[in-house]
Image: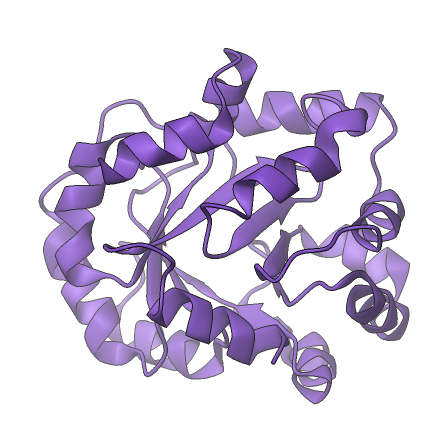
Length: 253
């Protein structure tokens, strides 16, 4: 099993009690040498690992992810480097690449699929690709059984949530806040009604992300979703020399 089916199954049947945990890291950050070691360590706790492809204009990302992305670019991290490095990885935990469209388009979709399969990548998240413009790359990914994980937000109308959910594979990504990643204000209880709508619209698992920073956030979200995505708070923990798995375990404690 690999690709969209592996992602779906891993979220539905997490390694520990509670929701599936999906950590996000920026590829090659805080340094290139520790990249594979960090993924190997995360794989012991994580159910799916999301790896960010650094991009010069990450419009969906807040200050923390922007900082890590720019630092990775400065150190020479590219999509090609990531795919080459992942070939050396040995893990059964599914890997998802989060990338803006431009690096994927420049790489070439057919070449991207081949390199992804060789590298053990199971799917992609492309935050700047509207559903109406994604037919070509969705078809290429679907033929290769790679997941194309779509995003919905609290501002997405219910009818459009239904449409997006039908085109998502692996899981459906429910953004929990309006704006960019990494907010410090915590999650609002108003998000509950929105997540109920998303869950009712999706035939595949739903994972919630953006703004998840604490056990309290996880407890708020857990009854309404299948998995939790944590990014900015994890990157900040790594910057503070906190072991990544130690931080993830605080979300479950």
